[in-house]
Structures are given as structure tokens and as C-alpha cells.
Length: 125
Image (cartoon, rainbow, N blue to C red; front, side, top):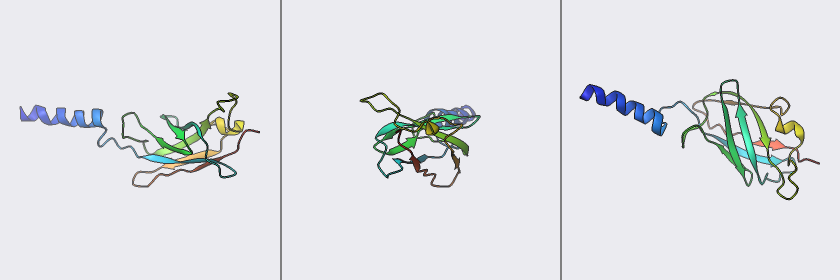
């Protein structure tokens, strides 16, 4: 019975609670170039293997992994943002920041590091 319990307990821990999953907490701020916090939107972290997002609330975001309390796997990510003005439904950001190919935002998520990535974007004109 003891031999069966340990593998089941390990799988339960890894799959359901995320312990030992090798991910890293990542967060930061998103501000406009004039220093104003971005009120709302979404930050996307993507690479060929993974795609994650974090909700921007009053200029602050945290990237959530697959399970609650988990983060991003270490690696290099292309980052972009989306969000619209509720009054006009127009994008809050210059188009270049809403596309991973043109945003110019690339971050390296590293195990054992703080991984705080502050982002400055241009407001749509």
C-alpha cells in the first residue's frame, strides 16, 4: 500500500496544486509614456511553446499560469498589450504595442529571479 501512495501523492501535488511545477511568478506595471498608469487591458507573454496573459488593473498586472498560484515557465517571451477605451471602444495603445511582431517588448523569465517587468507604451492618438 505504501508503494502506491507516494506516486499518487506526488501526482496530486504537481497536477492539482502546482507545487514543484518549475514556473516563476512574473508581474509588473504598465504605464503610458507620460507616466500615467494604464487603467485596464491585457498583457500577453508568448513564445513558440507557451502563451500566457495577465489582466491590467490600475497599471498593475500579474501573469497567472495554468493553475492558481503558478507562473511562467522560464524562457524568452515576446510581450504585447491590448485594451480599449470603454467610451469609444477604440484601442488604448498605438498599434505597434498590440502586435507581438512589432511591440519590441521581449523579456527573459528566469528561475530564482524576481521577474518584475515594467512596460511603457504609447497612448493611441
